[in-house]
Image 1 (cartoon, rainbow, N blue to C red):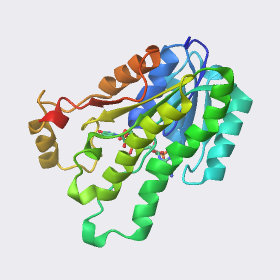
Image 2 (image 1 turned 90 degrees about the horizontal axis):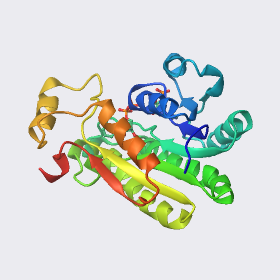
Image 3 (image 1 turned 90 degrees about the vertical axis):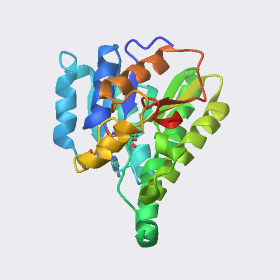
Image 4 (image 1 turned 30 degrees about the horizontal axis):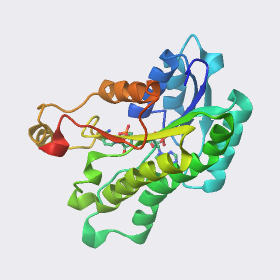
Length: 243
Ligand SMILES: NC(=O)c1ccc[n+]([C@@H]2O[C@H](COP(=O)([O-])OP(=O)(O)OC[C@H]3O[C@@H](n4cnc5c(N)ncnc54)[C@H](OP(=O)(O)O)[C@@H]3O)[C@@H](O)[C@H]2O)c1
C-alpha cells in the first residue's frame, strides 16, 4: 500500500509511545489524526512535532470507553481529513489490580479501554477500508499477555484478548486489510515504576536493557511497509518472552 498522504488514526497520541508513533507516521508522509483523551497539551505538542505539516494533521478528543464516542471520532476524522487507511490502536490503561482486591469497575474499565475500544475502532474503520480495497491496523499488545503478571491479571488478560482479536481480525478482513500486533516488553516504564522493578525487567531480558520508543516506532514502520505480513504478534522485548 502506498502510504504517502494517506490518513492514519493514532489513539492516545498525546503522550509517550503514541506520540512517538504519530511523529514517525508524519515523517513517513502520512496525514495523522492525533487522538487524545485527557492529554490535550500533549496532543498539541504532538502536532508541533509534526510541524511543517500542521494543516495536514488533526487533533480529536474522545473517551474510547464509549462506542458512540468511537463512531463520532471516526466520523469527524474522515469528514475533516479523509478516509482512514491506517489505524494504530495504541490507547490503553494500566494499573495494578491485586487478585483479592480487584473490583468489577476496575475489570470493566480495563477491558473497555484495552479490548472493547480496539474492536469497535477496527469495526468502524474497516468498512471503508474494505470498500476501498486497502488498510492496515496495528494493535499494541504486551509480552505480559502470554506470561501474566499476578498483580495485573485484568490488564494482561485484556491484552491477551487483543492478541486473539488481532488474529481474528486478520482473518475476517483479509485480503484487503492487514492486521498485526506489536507486543512490547518494558519500553517506557510508568513514571511511578520503582527502580527495583526496572532492574528486574533488564535482568529478565536477553539483551540486558529496556526498550526505547524508537524500537516500537521502527516496528510500526516495518509493519506498515510490509505488504505480506498479517495476523502476527511481534514481540519487541529484548528477548524477555524467551528468557
Ligand atoms: N510503555 C511500555 O513499556 C509498554 C509495554 C507494553 C505494552 N505497552 C502498550 O503500548 C501502548 C502505549 O503505551 P504507553 O506506555 O505509551 O501508554 P500510556 O502512557 O499509558 O498512554 C496511554 C494512552 O491511552 C489513552 N487513554 C487511556 N484511557 C483512555 C480512554 N478512556 N479513552 C481514550 N484514550 C485513553 C491516554 O490518553 P490521554 O493521555 O490523552 O488521557 C494515553 O494517551 C499501550 O497499549 C500499552 O499497553 C506499553
